[in-house]
Length: 172
Image (tube, rainbow, N blue to C red; front, side, top):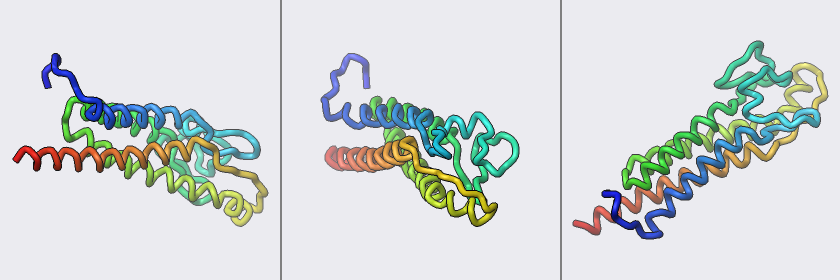
């Protein structure tokens, strides 16, 4: 689309919401994902340092082993947030790939966040069963934000693809 053409408000809704999802997803990386023994731990902290909750030695930016379960770090929310910002730009330019990226990132991000949420619900029992350690671990607010922004991105991807198909059919 040439630069001088005005856009309707409807054509700005999906790119704007995708941009907000991307910003929210990036922001969720720095929010508390888990409250471990009263200490909030963010997705960034899991990625950038070795937290005592991890049963895996060393630093691993992709995932960690936590009491026999896989725990995904904040790398994924950062990466997916950046990809959603790219998808928002592409959707603004009218490129269908923006909606496809949004759908794929949304489905993948919500799946990873859901795995972390499920794992976090069983941490206390796993620590007690495997090591005889009594811990307290509660879900922070960063993981639900990551999950909700991912889910919204997937929905926006489906809507964007449907609108593109509908507009192509209307032109025929």
